[in-house]
Amino acid sequence: MTDDGVTDDAVAEDAVAERGSGARRRAGPGRVLAGRVRRVGWRPPGLGLRATVTVSFAAGALALSVLLSVGTYVAARHYLVDQRERVALRQAFVDASVIRDGLLTRGARTSDVIGSISPPAGSDVVLHRNGRWFSSSLREGSASVPPDVADAATAGAVTLAWTSTSSGPGIVVGVPLPAVRARFFEVTSTTELAATLSTLTNVLASFAVVTTLSGALVGRAASRRLVAPLDSIAGAAARIAVGELGTRLPATDDPDLAVIVGSFNSMVETLQERIERDARFAADLSHELRSPLTTLKASVDVLSRRREELGPRSQQALDLVAVELDRLHRSLEDLLELGRLDAGVVTRDLTPTDLTELVRHALRDSRRPVEVLDDGSSPSGAGAGTAPALPVLVDRGQLHRALLNLFGNAETHAGGLTAVTVRRSGDQAVVLVDDDGDGVAPADRERIFERFARAGSRGSRPGTGLGLSLVAETLRAHGGAVWCTEAPGGGGRFVVRLPLRPAGDAEVEA
Image (cartoon, rainbow, N blue to C red; front, side):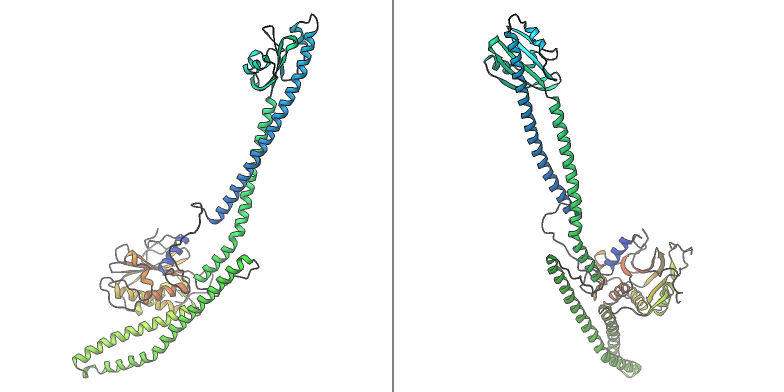
């Protein structure tokens, strides 16, 4: 942060420069209309249009993938469970038939019959007969048979139910065997089914993630295509705002954009015609007033040379007329210069110039005994008090006039100049103009650069109200800026910034 209240960050400098030059307050070349913008429609807070489109596509892809994944999982689970139950039921009937036939054999022992059967892997046979429980393995027993399944088998009904086994979830099938006064139960583990469903869940979840990311990528691409026309419009509007009124949007074959492009170009043409017409009117009017004003000024000069022949009242009236005529003449010259700037007349007499010497010339011409100083922050190696050379490419006459207006503003409205400091800041030349006034209120620091605007201060005298506006327009035409802040020791400070000439150009003129 420098003592002029402005950081060296380019973005901050540009923003402050635009505020200081009054670029947002009036319609015209190089000016942007500012105001409160009312957003229509809902948009997630903190998200731009591109991010909103991307998030919308991603959310849509996520919702669709979740819906499809859930539907696929439910359908697959229903099918797999149904198939597993059918297999378990069919296998139980086969094994129950074998047990029944074995028990019907004369002299067959229950344990031997149970031991002779070989159920499928993961399955165990449990038999209840004559009040005793028999099992084909030590893993499962009566505890694996739910009471409702046992009761249903006792009642003579074939029953299938899900239960818990020693290895996890399983299916138990109960089959009554009235011929041998027994109840047959087959317990089948379904760990492989659980593993299959878990794998299916992971696959579907991965599919949902991939689909969501793909949706986000598609949304990003779509948002770029969607925002591209807006970027073109924004770029054209920015060029128009800095005075390039000849900027137009290129024709498009898109029927949805053709209306917008046509309306935008028509609006710019109308705006350009209006600005040029107003600028020509102001310039023509000022030019027409110059001749009678010159005649009046010559007449007043003649009367002033014979002032002793006039009476006291006539002398007083002559003094008032001379003061007001001089003020009118300066206002007319300022209006003519502003008219040329508004009409888009580009400075053509650009000359390599040392800004420090130009500031010294302007101080000498304004007869103000103020030295040009360096604040010691310039990286040129010069000590404080030794003003560095600042090569710039400017129209010397226009910039000289702008500096005179800036110095005259301090004399007229702020008790006079106290210091003029120059320094180098990166690729910018900076001139700091401090005055002896009461300073400018923050609310007026932009308004004073408007035309015919005045902000009173100690010792303020009437002025044209055009000087600071002409300073701002002149610097804008040279790619620079001016703004107002508070001087460290009190009073007002006007900060002037101009781009330095690139190294290696021709030598500057003193």
